[in-house]
Amino acid sequence: MRWGPGDCRPGDMIRVRLGSVYHYGIFVTEDEVIAFGMPPVAEYADDPERFTVCSTGIDTFSCGRIVEVGECDRSEQKLKKDPDEVIRAARARLGGTGYDLIRNNCEHFANECFFGVKKSLQEEEARKKWADRPVCDVYIAEVTDVPEAPGIACSERENEILGCRNGALKAAKYSDWMLLGHAAERSLALDISSLDFRKTAQGKWTCGSFEFSLSHAGEFVAAAVSNRPVGVDMEIVSEFEEKRGKKAADGIRRRFFTSGEKKLYPDDIEGFLCCWTKKEAEFKRRGKGNFHPLLIDTSRADSVRTVIPELKPRMMLSVSSECVSSFRLFISDYTKSGTAGFAEV
Image 1 (cartoon, rainbow, N blue to C red):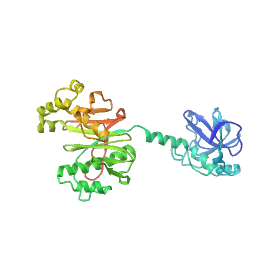
Image 2 (cartoon, rainbow, N blue to C red):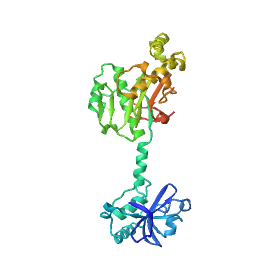
Image 3 (cartoon, one colour):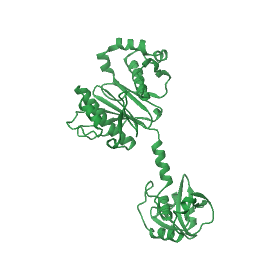
């Protein structure tokens, strides 16, 4: 539909721009314009008909702005109703309620009267912007026990978890997948039980509906969700100190840190783990090939961020994403009962 200033005729769909949005209605006469709700301006904020289908004059509808008239293109000419039918449909809705900014607004109303189809281009644009917004959320939770019947919708993943002989690793894999479900639902409004997951030749699980990355360390698991490629890695400082120590860290540092990284990160365990988790996260984000740490220079990367969550034991967590500036971290109290609460930190 093309829009522009013009003479209003009975049965026309009209609109007026008020700030960043358009207010839509059906023109009958100069004294009768039917719309779902009063114009969204401050002077009508307390009007009892603010969110009902009501009739006003053109001056009230337009708030002094330029009124645009909709002109149908060739395909729309076949769909639009007769002007008298448009007016009857609009008048039949007078007094109606149930206004919803996203699902049932003035544009939905006008299109339904004019075409018989409830739609809103403003809604579609808002949904597209919402879907395209940069998301980079990481969730951390404690490892939980694996029930006899895990109830994972992806049968291949469930069989993989149940077939794991290492009890601790089995629990971590299960907890990570459960946490992934909560993260996808909370951050992206996705139900992973209805999505298609596949495993790559490199052993990485993927999904066509969103990007994710998993990690675990000690009694904790982490799940990163995004609408861009993402990688996450975490390490517990005390655990690395006990199992490998400063000597091992120094050896890895000499062999696999770039000259820039050797200058950037402190020569201690925390400095080492900060760099190493960044390398792992960056590798996971790329999602292909073999891990060659010396070829990943985190001193020159602006797509990786490291944080130290307020948890005990102390840990290093790194996330890699092109939208890392939108990074948010949530600590989850996921429990064996299957419920979870999240606190952003």
